[in-house]
Image 1 (cartoon, helix red, strand yellow):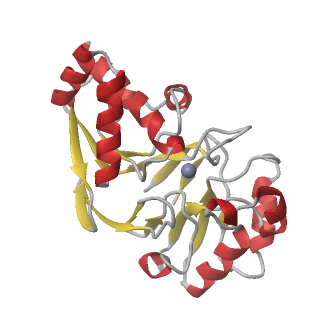
Image 2 (cartoon, rainbow, N blue to C red):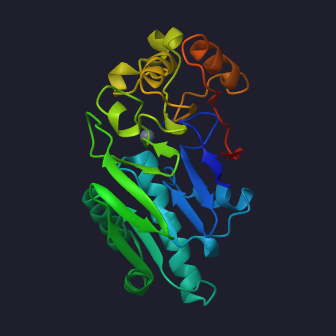
Length: 261
Ligand SMILES: [Zn+2]
């Protein structure tokens, strides 16, 4: 069974949620995917009952603030765990070349030298180019998601496809078509485009994604990286916009919600 624990579900400037990130659990593997924009990630991991000692594989999609600055805190916490003897082994950090350069640079400039130096023994950077990387015995097929403003990496593993905070677009549809489950960004409803202006921010809407998901024969959608103005009704509002266009399930998780696929 694959379990996805959404630590955060919000876009870059959330009001009522944490930035989009999650833990992916498959038998024998726990992969943290992104970490939001600050040290609040440590509190969210705690609330989700995910000990940092249990994280040995960590994938970061791209270098934007709301995905990478939390990663620096995860790295710092794990180095502290390792220094105190409570963390065994190494932390594999996966990402494209820009991500790895950014994490390493921020750590070097912002950590105590003793932490950074210890981290060189604890952190193992793995650059994910286009193509398959084995993580915990699973074949992760990494690809560029076709973002218009940053180099961003998504993946397919088994029946699951993931586009980072990018929506489903004509540029990435062929990379994820036929997947049983797709996790992608959906900034807001098409009905609310004048309020949230998704297209100005290189994001798109539930309606856009529902149409393309039908074209791409995608089974079910998990949408996140969304506005959170009406977070109590977001699931129903988004599902209603996609209904009638897309035949599969549309799930819009809340922070700390767990989904089994
Ligand atoms: Zn983002």
